[in-house]
Length: 361
Image (cartoon, rainbow, N blue to C red; front, side):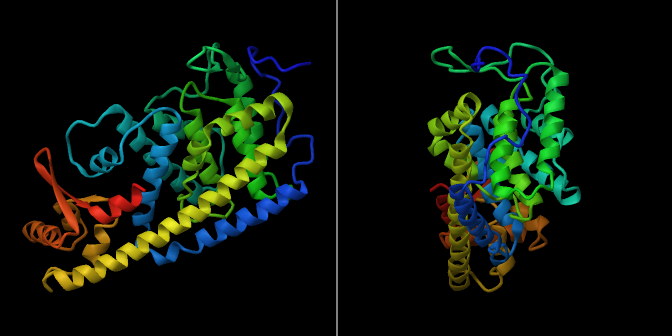
């Protein structure tokens, strides 16, 4: 029977597919992707404060993942909103920051309990959307072309059906069947998107599940794989590959796409971390030369790399200086050309210009 795009896909088969997934080409690409992830994971120790990496890279992932869903903000709006105590924040930026919060929430969960299941998925989407609704419990959800109105896909319908399919997915995620974890990642991502369990936020939740799965498998020790950028750059192919699995059973092409995404992203993220470390070292040396000895400290320079904007309160909270001295330290960094001050509401925010430019590439 031909697949019907306009009928709820309640017959969505459970994983694994009844075809040979681990073909020669798939296993070859899986090895390359695993090697790239291992090289990325091994870099964690070169950054002195892990918050420095997570705040920088997770926020980029949050921005890109939201952009796929046409929720667009700017780097500057994001970073200022992270640092500012008050002031108006536009809805798109708020939603991106909630995605970042969901990343931390999920990461904390898998460190304590390495299980991915429907309860976690629901908590994540509720954080992302700031909405207490859970599994879809009303008919009428479709995936369509916003420009033409064409129905592209109709996901499973009925809360009981959706919950059963999520439970089946959770069992597959944690199955001990010898399947390569990166191959499994591709299958998991397709299945989550095909179940489409929520009224909104499915794409972002599914991409977050990708990162958390890699953490549970020991392939990452921090949630820093920035895969959404790869998808944005290949958005038409991403959606085409998903449809081809549903309509034609083309699993190999889809899994290869996801393996390429993992390898490419791991390689780029590794380079980004090396660039951050190099910039930190350059800034330490510049600050040592330009700052008064009573102002310079390694802790102060590392603090301004935790996120692009900093302020006096951050210096105080880190125990580096009292309030008056903190303002003096930041002014000295501004005079040295390392920071640039901006007035936001009643407070001064100081932008780490080099870090901002690096993250905006």
